[in-house]
Image 1: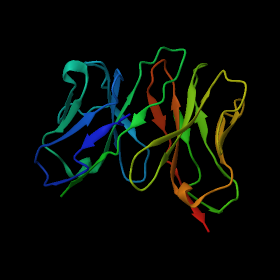
Image 2 (image 1 turned 60 degrees about the vertical axis):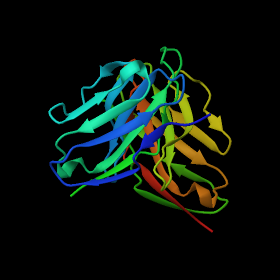
Image 3 (image 1 turned 135 degrees about the vertical axis):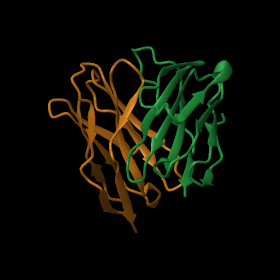
Image 4 (image 1 turned 45 degrees about the vertical axis):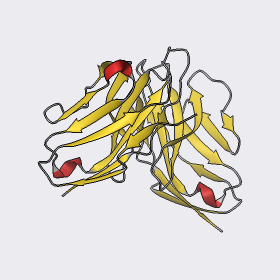
Length: 117
Length: 114
C-alpha cells in the first residue's frame, strides 16, 4: 500500500514569491491534514479536511495561505506571498474517518522543506 | 488549555539498553488519546503507539510500551533493547476535543550509542 505522497521534497524561494505544495493521501482515507513544523518544534495543524470540506482551518493564516482538496482526494497548500518566517517543513497526513470510538492514527508524508530567502 | 510537555530535549542510551522518554499532558477532557511518533532524519513521522484515556492496560507494540499514569497525566514511552536505528526525534501527541486533531510536544532527540 502506497503511503502519503508529497511533492516537492524541498523548495527554496525568495520572499514575496508564491509557492505550492501537493499531497496525495493514502487511498480511502477521508481525512487529510496539513501541518507546519518549525525547526526544533513539533508539528502544528494548519487545516483539516473531511473529504473536500475544510472542517478546521482556525490555525491557517488566511491572508497568505490557502488550501484546496478538490474531489476529496489530493490537496494543494499555497502560500502567496511567502515571508521569511514561513520557512519550515510542511507535512501532510491522512487518516480514516474518526468515529469517536476509535482513534485512527494519522499517517504522515515525508514533508516539504521550504526555505524562504 | 490543551498542552503536551516533553522536558527532555535530548537523551542518550547505550545500544541494547532500555530508555524512557517523558511526556506529560494537560487537558480537561475525559476522553482523549495519546500517541507517540518517531521522526528520523528523513523527516517522515512514523506512528509508534497509542493509548486511549479509558484503556486500563498500558499499550505495548513490540519493543515500545507506554507507561500511562492517568492521575499524574503522564504517558512515558519506554523503548526496550535500544537499537542504533532508534536514533531519531520522538514526539508525544494528544488527541482531544472530539476530533482527530493532534497536539504535539516539542520532541526529544534520542541518540543510541554502540
